Length: 198
Image 1 (cartoon, rainbow, N blue to C red):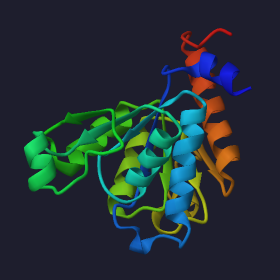
Image 2 (image 1 turned 30 degrees about the horizontal axis):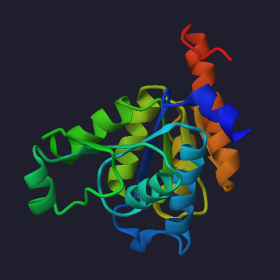
Image 3 (image 1 turned 90 degrees about the horizontal axis):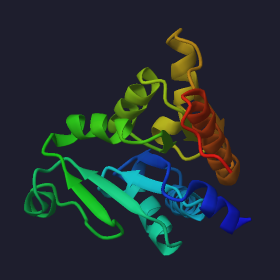
Image 4 (image 1 turned 135 degrees about the horizontal axis):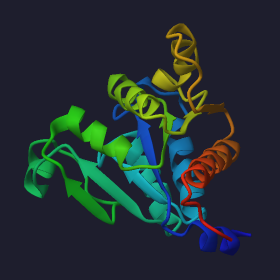
């Protein structure tokens, strides 16, 4: 089954992991869940995209790399030197880091736009920013509930905004969430006439 999934999706799709850099606001098991989400994405042969930062995205990148996946990071910094010294961000667990030079808010726009879908785990204000960009762009968004922070508030926020449900998928189960996000990507690709034929 894994080989079939790898042949089917291998590096065709990109899923962005959005979540808190400061995991102190997250549920006690959020880091472990982030790693497992990274593994699940890698098992499907899908590229993981992160904000090249610490916290939840970092742990998801670690999980993906340990599973043999590919990870691309988009940094707020303009160079590797600034990434390391000014922003104090890591470079490990990434195959490629793109130095955008657009600081955090500009990086968030590029990050969500470069992915086919976004998965939200825990989160703070920056995660909410990435969520609203993806929502406005009508992208599939998976929300891993029970991880604390933004992720546990999004269902109520979406309901209160009176804009409809968007393409937001909520689940407490990692495998279920990733399966549904991948299915939503495939639905989008098929609707646009560029789905992967098996």
